[in-house]
Amino acid sequence: MTVSPAPRVAGARAWLIWTVGVAAYVLAITNRTSLAAVGVDAAERFQADAATLSLFAVVQLAMYGGMQIPVGVLLDRYGARPIMTAGMILMAAGQLTMALSPSVGVAILARVLLGAGDAAVFPGVLRLIALWFPAQRAPLMVQLTGIVGQGGQLLALVPLAAFLHATSWSIAFGSIAGLGVLFAVLVFALIRNRPAALAADVSVNTDTGAIRVVTSSVDTGVGIRAAWAHPGTRLAFWSHFTTPFAGSAFILLWGMPFLTAGEGLSRTAAGAVISTYVIVGMALGPIMGELSRRVPHLRSRVLVLPAIAVQLIAWVAVIVWPGAAPHWLLYALAIALAMGGPASMIAFDHARTHNPAHRLSTATGLTNAGGFLAALIAVFAIGLALDLQGAGTPATYSMDAFRLAFLTQIPLWVAGAVFIVIERSRTRAHIGWTKPPRKR
Image (cartoon, rainbow, N blue to C red; front, side, top):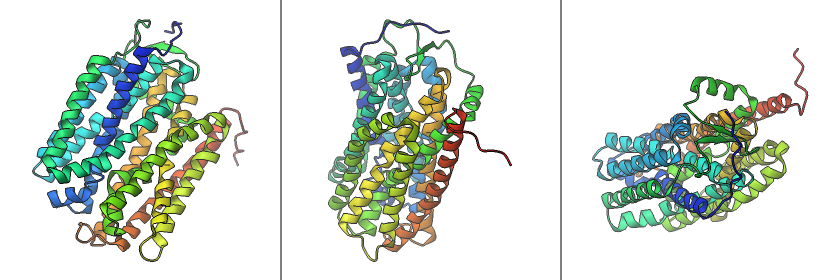
């Protein structure tokens, strides 16, 4: 069923709802990266080797990625308000469990809860944007949401680490849990699923503004198969798979141990490098978004593939540098990795462009899962490589061990780039921009 709604104008109510939603997203990012600055503290608290420490991030990422499609279906059925509220409560429960956890097993359960709650927030904000703002403004609002949300990484990196060292593990993580409860109340009290002018929840095509009333859950199996059958969705998946994983592995877990225990930087100097990664990523967001809008037919060639190449070159330069890398090279690495986040947002442009409204959420979920699948592979592979070299604990971390461990990222870049090239060619042929290759 299709309806013709009254034109939507982003009034004060819309901006209030977006502000609350994006603030919740900032807290979700803080929760997601809360182990980044205290990885060494976590290893010491739980007496965990590198593979076990990786497992904390892996289970969190796996839960986040695995929940993308179920969350999309739930958002279509029930709207953003209850699903985002449940997400904030789950994250609060996860951080409270982490604050009180006496063992690795309980801490892993905490990360499962955290990943499940985190999965509901960003898709929920995207849905609010589609329903409360004019369709023509949606791409800009999505980029703005991503930029503001990344500020949560800065909160996790320096203030959280300083607060933990000034107080205790339980107080620091318990305080984040308290913030989660507060934001659950704010989300439930202030967010509304849709404007009053819309009589029912709808799915919105942000390219055309076409609105489709949602009366029940979509046949998920059919929707997934139909979305994946389009080469544009596969192009979106591999674009999101390949561009952000190195930065995610760096910011979620391995950046701080590498910079301090490997490169010998102080916590303050390492925090400055990682903060550069976050700030540059925020600055590049609107630039990448505008370029993506201007050259939709060249997104992969001039934005996605170059971002992958720059990250690969920067990491290889750090790995082969004799001795400790100079500070300028580490900052260059942070800047290169920062390109991955904004480049990964282009994947959602692919998903939105090549899918109709009735399966847009499914295609977006598939796309979003790609980046987190690659990230969990990278995080675990780095930890496993450290363990295999006998450098799996903070006392045995070494520069040479980290160098070899970070080489495990290269196959992911290569494989992802190959699939991007393949699916780009298939997508262009599918939509008639090029002729399909002749079958021999």
